[in-house]
Image (tube, rainbow, N blue to C red):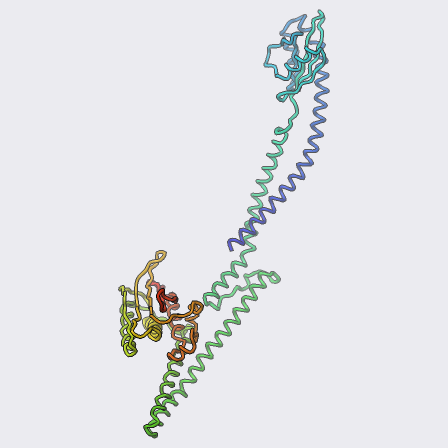
Length: 472
């Protein structure tokens, strides 16, 4: 979701930036064209003014210098410049400046030197100045060089500086407001998708009551339509699962009564028949017992899935529970030339339902005893681990049987799933025990997983939080 939000935000920001750049280039191209014409016009006007000023200065300056000296010449030059930056100077025929009031720009000196050498008007531009110079004569007949220097109009980097500054300001303003608007827009557009994701996660975690609701968007919006479709799908799945649970529960209850009458009839039949028929009655009784066990497990699974089982929690010594389950399973395993042992046992106390946890562990251990090879022992280990600041009780049950295919590991805890149908039927398993284990562990906010051991056999791990929330 964060990736989608960032994509929408950056796309809007990029669109704003490109729009601003295109608009700025369009405006600046117009301004540059107009600025170029204006610059040419100003330059022509300045050249005309400089020429007129040079003509007037060349007539008056030599007369003032020969009749009144250097001081009146300097005052006249300053008066000629006025408020502008135009500078007027008078040089003698050898190129020596007769005005010492300020430093003379290099362009002015260069123009005066060329005019003295060639005895002709000269125009020189250098270091931001444009200078005009021409040879003039004073009343006494002595030759002089009159010069006028004016600042050159901006060009190159000077011309682009205000343009670049204007572009930077526009881009900063566009990105600032575009970023704010883009953030709000991206947040608004992704809000319904975030609600969809939350509802989908709750459904994936088994909460079939999760719905997107009317907050998914307005009618006609594609995301809103998707939310309503998801709600309809969730409702349909919830109805189907509830119907399946009711069917299993009802069928199991209905089977209990005829099965009880069947056992009574079987007992009466034993009394009125010869001993030759006992082996047939034994077979019928064995199958009836299996059927009764299957019905009991179906009812237990139905209660766990429907939530009707009230999870009464109390302080529970988990190490003691593990020891009792191992002792009972070992007693049963000895008749098959197998054994059950506890290889690691850490004293642990957690809040939980002792009957559910006992049933969950017993199903795993009995399943391991059923498939481990003769002469081997089922190993049970209990230890306490810490993960991200939380404490967990980890129970591992390992057998030395054939294991299961890797593709079947995630399906072992599904009701009625058999990795090998023929083998499971021969062993007498109902295919519900591990499903009951998974539901019981999940009610304690724990997890159960299976994997094949490195040197053969199956390893099942039950992970339970030690400080479970009683309200769950």
